Image 1: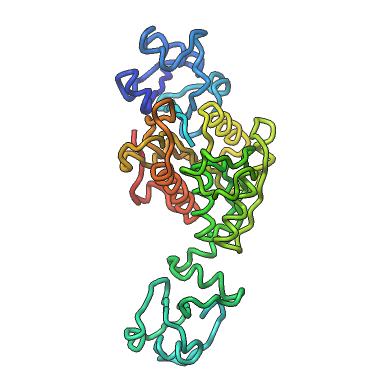
Image 2: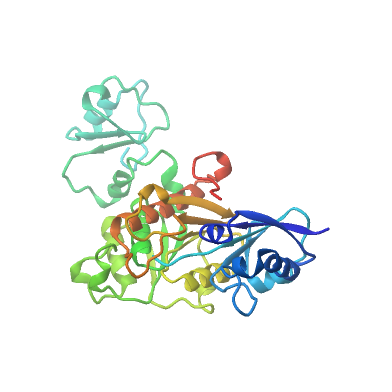
Length: 92
Length: 277
């Protein structure tokens, strides 16, 4: 079964209460749907908007490569894949 | 010796070279490290060495200046810096410090993009001066970097970065530094740039505000070609401003990561920063 290790960085890590979790899914769309379900409505708020989509302020790194959310959704997932969410915060 | 190849008989001491080529020199740098005039008597110069002789306070000839400026570099570093092209997206607190640091180490070309002008509230953290208020930041920064190192080529772009112009502006860079302020613009920049240039490293920043401990700021590798500098939690927001020291710490983390990448250092080399999940 396809599954990905999803990693969360600060401050998302604190909001979710853990640094990573294993999420099953055939492709990126399934992984995101299952991730939202596994997090539950309260914990998912930090990562997902009211429309159920990943909030646009996140960067997504799939297998060490920065990809857009739409590209990730269409990506096939293989066991051992990693998905990282990075939340850039204001200041520069 | 001062940017020229010279032949000497062996053995020759550093002091003998000084007496022969620049007897009034009072700063002697041998392979990147200063040597006292006393120790120079017993320092035998070996083949392939770099010797820099400086008369303190004297403005050198232009053809000597670059070598003298880089005299304290680790040997072999300068040429690789000189060949590098680094993009800097944003010329504010982070970008202006990154540009100055990279200019001082002799990066060959800096491609800097920012749409804004210098205004008084920038001066608490950005490398601009009162007389530059009102100038486009990229032009003011070009002036400042060239004052520090006239051998750097600066390509200023006074534009707001958009999904449509990022690839064109940064098409030639070896590394991109993200130095923007607004999170959504940071994400847009990194996503668009990475889509066009997936194997060009990006060094971004996140969490540089306030006066929280400096040591919270670190460099994390979060993807093969993506590095994040900052504490990843201290945002610029109401009640928490941006100030020179912490912004400068982060900017110099970014600049150092750029240098490490140019020199082929990766975190797997065990040189320190590493993954910080």
